Amino acid sequence: MADEGNDTRQDATVDARLAAIVDSSFDAIISKDLNSIIKSWNQAAERMFGYSAEEAIGQSILMLIPDHLKGEEVEIISRVRSGDRVASYETTRRRKDGVLIAVSLTVSPIKNADGDIVGASKIARDISAIKESERRIRLLMREVNHRVKNQFAVILSMVRETSKRSSDPREFEELIRARIMALSRSHDLLVTSEWAGASLFDLIQEHLKPFGREGQILLSGPVLTLQSNAVQALGMAFHELGTNSSKYGALGSEGGRVEITWTIGAGTQVSSSARGAAASAEREFQLLWKEISTPPQGDRGDEISRPDDTRKGFGTVVLQRVAPQSLGGSAELERSPGYLSWRLSAPLAAIIVPQASAEAEDAAALGFGI
Image (cartoon, rainbow, N blue to C red):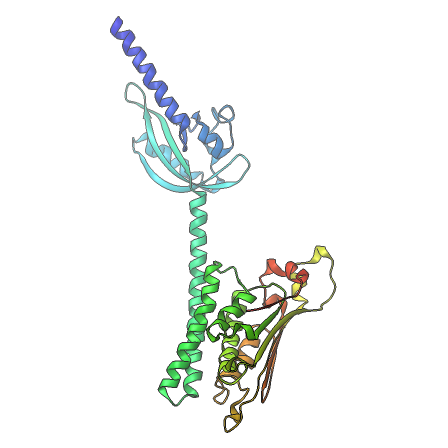
């Protein structure tokens, strides 16, 4: 009799431990009979599906299954009756509030003391965060694929246009290397922000840094966050302008000066409630690159104030066609001995990221040197 009492107490202790493990599990653990009626429901099931144990126990498990997936339960019960353990699989279930969640399910038969199958134990794990992460990765990979193809197209265009205008292989190699490195600098800014955009100030600074003479450069304009397309288009333009200036203009002499200003042109007045992408679509982004230098004397005078490779055409193509057309705008290039200006106008909506449009309208003009 004493041994039976000890066995009973041991069994009770084991049952209590198992119950505590089930109740403290982070996974929803649910048991049901062969008619799909819920018999037990742990705290994780309450958190996952929104039903309390009192609400769930005694109800059909079908209340968790979306209509188009109810056939799954028929298949599960059939396999449980056969004594099969249902391997983990991913599916969708419905919470009390109607929200669908992605779950990973494992189902095993439950047997009574005689070894007969009387129900099933189901372990459910919420994998919504994993699925969302996978979705974002797929979107990112598609975006990366698109951007890589776009970069390839730009590079091929650079190679083609530069080769048309270069007779010296060394000059061709030098120009291509510099232009690809300029693309890389724009790309690095976007990667740093996880493709959320890049500051216009940072973009200018990054592209003019290789030429030095920071004290001769003045930037003035509101703080703007550029879209990725604008980063690439304007980055190419700043590289061509900076390269030209270092060879023939203000950044090639001690007394030269480069002023880069940008503004948001006046548009139709809108109420504060109508601000955002719609408002920015009615406004215009305007940028002016102006440089003044002392023209060298002698036989180099004919080359003064030409964008880099203008005599072969590629710099002019970028400034007058590629950059403005990429942004849906227009550009004007003026040059004379000791002077060069490039004026770009484009819809604000094509320049800045949508969520930054309201801030851009209110931003005060700031001036600083680099």
